[in-house]
Image (tube, helix red, strand yellow):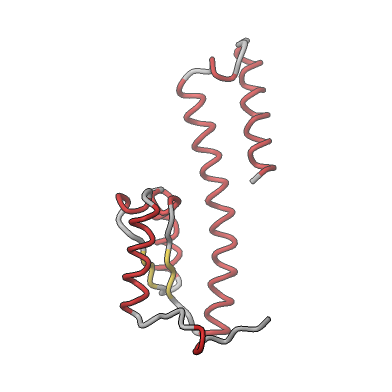
Length: 132
């Protein structure tokens, strides 16, 4: 996202100059909110594009049709909504923990462990295909 962050900083600076302000921090709340919303929209579009390619690959190669959205990013309601739409359009199942569990790494790890136990997933080395 380095290029996107640079574009956002440059856009904010252009707006600052147009408004005749000393610093970007001096921009009105509405300008800051619009810049942030635009950043989020483009960032999520990038994730959507990558996800669609990954979903096709997983479906074609391994018949996988389940997505787990985890970590702090899973607390983002806009991201959750847009990924859910993609999953529904492609008849995928999306698993995502409640937002209150997404910002606590310990809770997130515990939730992920419960999900793995429920599907019989394991890390037992003897049954894994490991290539060095």
